Length: 125
Image 1: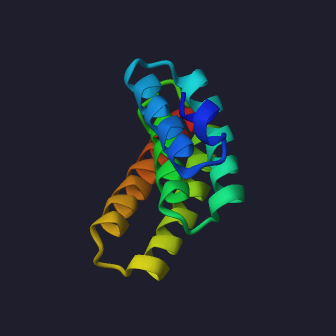
Image 2: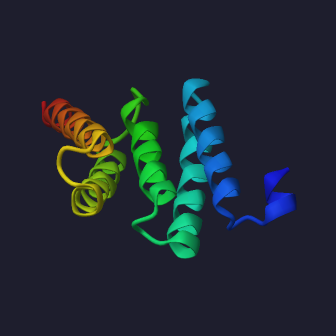
């Protein structure tokens, strides 16, 4: 409904897309979540910029679609790691290292790295 009213690139429509992505993750519908969140992330970065809160939040949610998925492949986790590195770097620059959003993003990056390491070790065995 927000898309029809405001347009797909409006920040509220983009935020609604993030919320739907969260719901899809909770429903364990990971492929659908990843597709939606990837599209929303690209739209947000283009319309609002890479430093906008919605873009940063979408990056985190996209990475959660990999960390919450027990079947995520190493390649998916590498993409999530790259996105989270960018999110953390931006949050540190924009909000500072002690901001709660920065700390949350750092924790998500750590989780991605832990899971990537475990997946790569499992794959190597």
